[in-house]
Image (cartoon, rainbow, N blue to C red):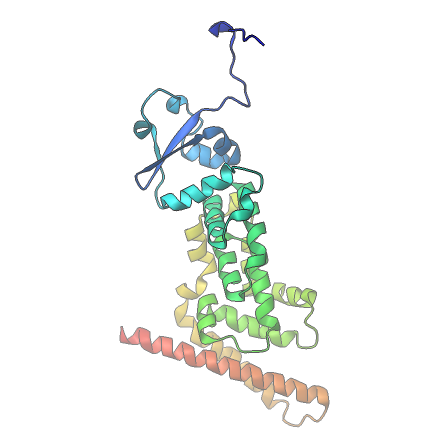
Length: 295
């Protein structure tokens, strides 16, 4: 078949499949990729880095002159993100490790790539088996179902929430999870636990915050510091809160001295467990207070 060369004046760029490249610089390493995929992937990313401008047209200047500088990330992290943006074949996304999916989730959340964020959440969901990790990652990346799953696991577990884990999720959260645990002793189906979580103000407030539409959420660091990590801002009040819960539990126990029924005895046992847990938390809060006073 003979190729017919058309005059340049009759050639038109296709609206969908005529792509210009964009050059990024991360840690002094240059990356050149089609800008089209990034523009349709995130309007906010395209606006923030001026990707819709014609200033980066091919041949206008060298890569280093036109490169968009991305700070706060590594070249390895950006390369991982580009691999999901520009997969080499249809099964490419199945080859990412857990750490790589977390990188993709972090950057997709930061840059508002909604589809890639949803993809990362879907792939990571089955890999988060530790409830503490599930809670903290859910808080960091605004995934309420991960937080709720971690809460549910800690409520259904029979053992104590350790001091170390209480510190990781916040002592206020740990106390409220003990309250939910005691409130669901008769029935701990997923629906019962969820209902009690939503009836606990501190936990319900957090889950509602995480469910806000993305356009209404503050930045990651601001949101985490101002809303999701209240324990750090209210460290001095932890001991008082735990002590108040302990006082209430002790009063309830005192009112059940003469119980004889099996139901009453079961309530006494549950109160004793709750009091023991609260005493452990209160002791830990006292240690923190002593450490702060020595500084």
